[in-house]
Image (tube, rainbow, N blue to C red; front, side):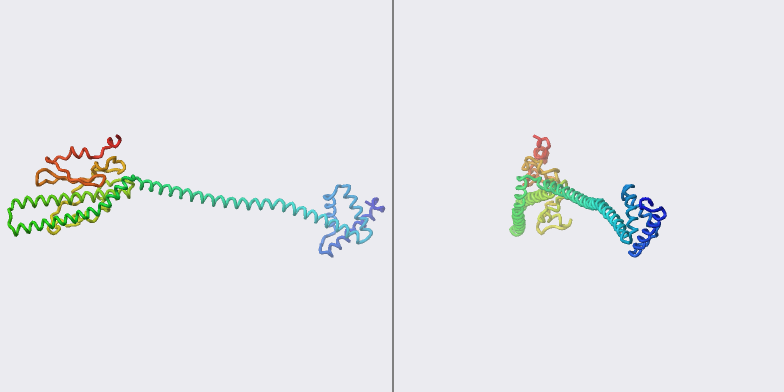
Amino acid sequence: MGQALGSSENAAQKRVARAIEELRCFLKRRGGALSAGALATALASEAVTAAPAGLATHISVTALACAATGGGGGLTLFKIMTMTKLKVGIITAVVAAGVATPLVVQQRAQARLVQLNQGLRQQVDHLARENARLSNLEAQANDARALSKDQLSELMKLRGEVGLLRKQTNELDRLRQENRQLHSSQASVGRDTGATQIDSNAEMQKQEGIAKLNYAKYWVLAFYLYAEKNQGQFPVSLDQAAPFLPDEAKVEANLAADESLPYTPKFGLTPDRFEVVYQGALADIANPASIIVFREKQAWPRSQGGWNRAYGFADGHSEIHVSQDGNFEAWEQQHMYSPAARAQ
C-alpha cells in the first residue's frame, strides 16, 4: 500500500489511520459512534462485498489518497458508503415487499374463499332441506288429490244432500206427529183395536225405514269427509269417521239408556248397531253405486212379513233391502267389493 501511495509503509498506515479517525469523528458528529477498529472492519467488509478484489484495492487506495488531502475526501467516502447501504436497503425492502405482498394477498383471498365456501355449503344444506320439505308437501298434495274428479263431484253432491236429509228428517218428525195424532184418535173414537194396531205398526216401520236410510247416508257422507282428509282412504272403523258425522245423526247416540224422545221410539240409530264393510281407497272402487260400504248388523222384521236391513253404498246413496227368509248373504255378495272384479 506504501508503494501505491508513493511513500513508506509506515507513512501509508499513518495516512489510513488518520483517514479512519477523521471518518470516525465525522460520523460521531452525525450521531454515529463507532470505534476506529469497527469502522475499519466495516469498510473492509463493504469493499469486499460491494466489488471484486481488484476494484476494492483500487477504491481503497483512492480513498486513502483523498483522505490525505483533507476532510473533503472523508466526506466523499462516507457518501459512497451511505449510497451503497441505502441502495442495498431499498433493494432489500423492494424485494421483501414484492415477496410479502403476493403472500398477504393470497392469504386474504384464501380466507375469503374459505368463508365463501362455508356460506355456499350452508346455502346448499338449506336448499336441500327446503327441497325435501317441498317434496313432502307435493306428495301430500298429490295424496290429497287422490280422489278423482267424479268422486269429488260425488262428494259435493253428498254435501248437497245434507239439506235434503234434513228435510227428510223434518218429514220424519211430521210422520211422528201424525202417529201421535193416530194414537189420540184411537183413544177418542174407539176404532177397532186390531186394525189400528196394524196401521200403527206399518206407519212405525215406515218411520224406522226413513230414519235408517238417512242414518246410513249420514255415515257415508262422513266416510267421504274422512277420505278427503286421509289421502282418499275410507275409515276402517266408525270411530275414525265419527268426528265427521253430522249432529243430526247423533241424536239417539247422545241419549241415556233410559232416555227417549217424546212420543217417539228408539230405532237403534247408534254406531254399535252398524258396521264398516269396506276398508280401502275410494279410487279402487270401479262402480261405487253398487258397492256396499256400510250396513246394519242385524235385520229387523216387517209387519207384512220378511226382514229389512239398511245399507250405505260407496256413491253415497242408501237402501233398505228386503229378504223374505232373512238371508241376505247371496245379495250382499253381489254388492261387496272384490279385488278380482276391480282387476277385470
